[in-house]
Image (cartoon, rainbow, N blue to C red):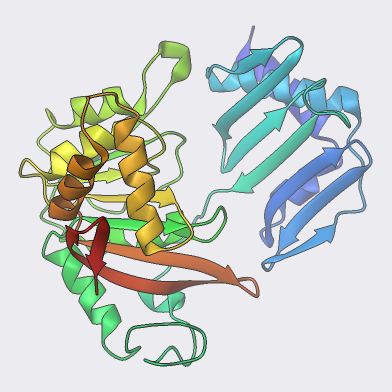
Length: 320
């Protein structure tokens, strides 16, 4: 089907959502049901006061599926889609899986790389009541040093906490003389270095993040950047970090720094290589140098914790 025809069809289906998607102050647009649309603006949720009919929602999902060229998961008539479109990342679910009608969530890709300083909370000093453990006057410099000297760093946090935004900031600290290979499940990262190549997984072509990580090692990377570690590709990432590929950066979902390491170990075990959990943990302790925990509080994204990994003993990671 002609692409221009599909785009016109999409414009018609978007209807009342178009002004919201064009509004620079809107970060997310969420369609819960035909008469239930919400937006995030300034870090806060508010009702949008517009409608999106079930027919329009279904048309949007099907057209975006065709335009993206990505595969979707089908469950009977239900459909789950996760794709990129223009400056947005779209997740969508069709009935009967979505009980109230077609459900969509548009999340805007960041168009700005925020400096590291923008992730620092006011008054984050050692011993403060909010749990920040590092001295606010010195630990940002340590994080900068980690990136510039090629430490392997994980960024963890909840959905929407700012992991991708912080990863963009860390990428900006990498020396301009180095070559980056960037791997993502869905394109979101902003890379300003002159010498880089970026790969995106494509289920429709049966290309996974694990396939891309293996291919990336043949592209002479000085740095490997993985947008989000979520499956068995964790094994290949840990192996890469353990075989001379220093300065790797990646994100994963976790509630705090130590939890991120346990989650990474579980993802490595999913690769089914026959390693024991303790062997995996010891490998991680030798290869990951630091974990940064980022969170959103009162609509602001900030670094909550910075932990240096120093080993693994008696079933626990040693961190400082």
